[in-house]
Length: 314
Image 1 (cartoon, helix red, strand yellow):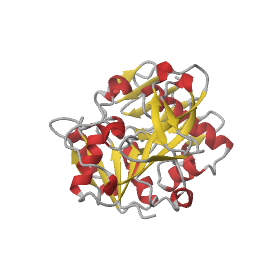
Image 2 (tube, helix red, strand yellow; image 1 turned 90 degrees about the vertical axis):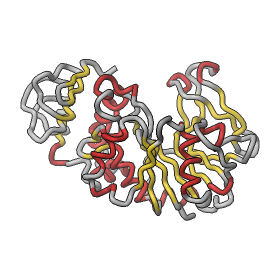
Image 3 (cartoon, one colour; image 1 turned 60 degrees about the vertical axis):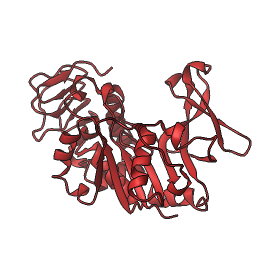
Image 4 (cartoon, one colour; image 1 turned 120 degrees about the vertical axis):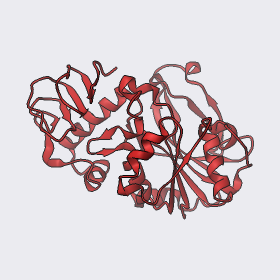
């Protein structure tokens, strides 16, 4: 199946990234050597997307200024939503109008990876050309805060149960934030709208799904960013050939010579320390992370970026 367009969702406010997130847009937080948004562009390209779009709103000018100096964005088009943010549904319709309401659109969340190798992705969507809207889903624990998809006997979406209404510690199927949409199937809508209101509305069109059984790499909050970065090092120690890790190495986001598997550190002498600056960290504070700047204000379990420090990872 041909993927005509990809929309990478990057218009959010990043409020869950702490005080560093107030200055550094979430999509520019580094996954070791590369900004999260750049890796998403490279991932979309690997899946065969012919044209890549990124929607922006909060801190749009800073993101644009950063991306213009990175070669990965040379053929990427930014859709700045102003004066108001359009939400996910509105963002999809905004792109659809721009491209004439035709073609296959892959929607990716900027702050998370359900990484699939290109051949795996092609296999999953093979024969699904007639599906108007395909959601990529995965199985999670209800205690983790996710909503549950309601699936009918034919395997299509028929509702959503909000997390507070679910019993605790149960396996549920949830939406990953990634979808494949036939733009021709959409009823055009102006302005802001929710994704399940104007795009994946099961009362208006059949919404099918593909359940993913791959690792989930979530950078969506300050705490999850911390946990995922260290999980990458932990996984590298166990299996350096893991597909997502090979992707990071191939795209030069992970420099293997900086990894100390015994100390579970990156470019640092201390244990459980991730240092993303140019100079190796030779101090003893741990665990901690430096995204940019100096190590003068590093605190245990702290994330530092320039002069800002979040003292805890919660």
